[in-house]
Amino acid sequence: MHGMVISRPIILAQLSLLAVVSYAFCNNGQTWRSTTLRQSATLPFNNTVSKQPPPKRSIHLISLPPKDDTFSLPAESLIRECWKWKDSVLGDGRDYFVPRPKSLKAFHSLFVGMEIIVEMQDDLTLNKGRRSSSTDRDSIETIHAERTNDQLVDENIYNRRMRRTIKLCSFRSSTKYQSDDVAPDASTTTAEQVARTTVAFHLLQQIQSHRSQHSSFLQMSGLASWLDLPDAVNTLCMNSATNVIQIEESTRIMQLSQRLTCIEGARPISTHLSLIASGIAPRTNRPDREVIFRPYSSRDAHILLQLKRTAEVVSTLSSDKRGGGACMKILLDSALSAGKAARNEQIVPEIRKLKEFGSDGTPPIGLAKIVAEAAVQMAVNPTVDTCVARLNALGSANNIYLLRQRVNDVVDTLVDCDDPRFNKQDLQRVANELLHAPTMQLRSGEMTESDMEDAVKNIEADLKAYCASQSKLVEYNTFTAEPQQAFEFTPRTMICK
Image 1: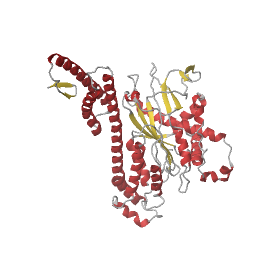
Image 2: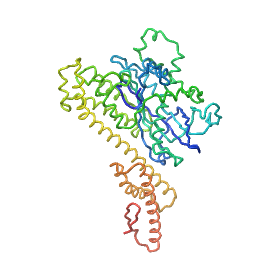
Image 3: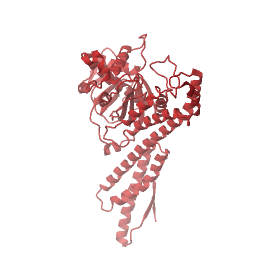
Image 4: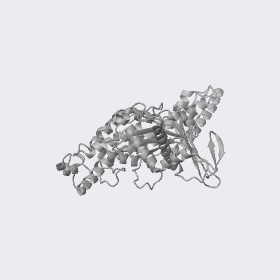
């Protein structure tokens, strides 16, 4: 199962998740993590959120690994059960499988409003908010209900391609480090573990539910594989998530999460999606099979239809409409464009060399590799560049919104002093003038998210200086009866004409 990248998807539902990651560090430098999962309503974007540091978005692709016939790897039985459950409930992704939109959306609903807390603690672990001693191990991984607001998982996609399962998640984090000993990439590592643990948690919940169910007539007769059954995904299992999961079950979750593969970052994920849509990506479940590029094969091109269906049904169930679903839509549309471009003779003239082999023929591996490299250079790479640029622009739009929201909060705070000399309309006009330069810098990519804090502080200082100047000017004009002077403002400078 690929959690962040799309492998030959058929149906997709896009939801919004809420997750939080908090850090605490032991005195001895060792860290232990307990992951907290919870389902709750999505929090609205309000002034409280806007006052926090701008979020950092991270996208992760979580994938089921291929089966290990030697059973030498841990949690191999769980991996096989995951494949079995996925093929039975969500479809096997073969050429003639039946799409399962109801089952997919039900599975996605489990992630909506989920909060994840990663805590690091010594030989004590939280149990329903209480501490319990660790007996047979230095730390115990626990999963329980909690509520925070540091890390937001705002998008996720589940999909399938040729026995592949994909979970695409996007994290926006504003985690603050509580120790100088933390490595700069600690948030990245934690976000990846959050993505892995989230998918592993829900997979194990569904597997346990699937075990307890008796085989119905539809399943025994094989008809269930052709139906999109409404109750195939157990959406009631999260009702019991408020209780602490047993140690043994938590261990299985962590073992399963470690087996899941992960790809992180917009460019690697977009590249992977584009290669899959182009029919060039290797198949993780069949590592020993050579992938041959066949641009004229109608069977290989079937992924474009599946990808188009997926892109059409992308929906955002979050109340946050400021680009909540745009990130996933951009990835899907870019992959679809790359797949079409790789099969276009006008864009990749080299594919004409494979035309004589038709739809069912298999070209020589050497020739197919040469043509595939040309398709990557002429079709995939330009599409990926465009996709990454669009995602960066989307991120800047969110940052611009946050910047303006925080400055508006400063304006409201200054106006709330009930001083009649401070007109909100005039103060807002000055704030908009001061916002112009940092807004353009964010739009062009010249300002990083870390610079936004300084920009807000500078604008706040300028607005306070403006208010002070206006106050002194009004007092002066009161005694002199002269008309009020006009002011011209530059960042961190007040110039009186």
